[in-house]
Length: 368
Image 1 (cartoon, helix red, strand yellow):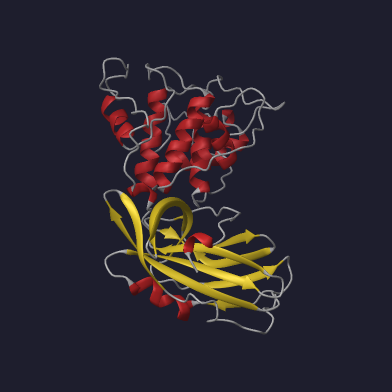
Image 2: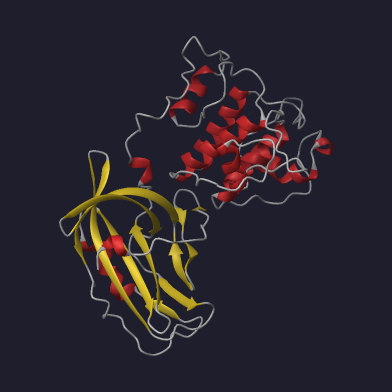
């Protein structure tokens, strides 16, 4: 069965399990039609464009890939519309993945391809698992000095539905290896005389730009206070830099006062929310406690945990909003968003664009 005939209609994204220094494996549930499949161990997900040489036919395709531990040791649990699968078969294919001139190339397909291996005429009971270690362990290590891309197909023969999904073993993001798109606008250069950056911040802002943390739309004066729209864009850039993948595009817009796609991405990921009445208020300024909460939201989206506290150690703890207190305490403990002097945090004080880039860089360096 050729790879391009497999179903790619996958749903339900899984959060990245972030630990230091590696990703943690978590279950991921995929749905396609009526079939739901749970993989027991997924490190993270990413969309990667791959050039396929499929039995002599060559084509490019962007594929949603589930990244698994180096040796694929995971179980599959499946149901069809919440009911046991009546009788099933499965098949797998593997391709050797190499990075050639900045392009991931898949070739030399091998594997179980006839749909007969793994067939079980007994019903797949709800909650039962298919341990595919024996079938897939050799796929993970079949190709040396390269990654192995494996497609897996499960067919419910009784209801004539099937699901297809794709895995690559390893914890280094493939998307981060792609060449730069020459059509992408170049990020701002704080060393350029057209940009105004405080002398004390210039070197660190340059590092933030180099790390890909500076979005478009920040303007030319980095010394001014940052807006909600701009900080939303910074949070998305930070998420992409820490995860190694692109934030997913969003089609639905919950706001009536903005159509900025980056704001919609930040809202969909849980980094920002509206101000009420269906509005986002993109031009409003961000204060320090709001900045701490947005950064904490990026961290928890990546699988991190923010401990609950009854109070911070700051003298102005009473001025910190209850919904922000945990984030402020955590970000201060990591020396990412610290006090303003005299043991005060200044929760309602503003944050400049350059300060937002510096705390984003600090989080990238400290918690990645």
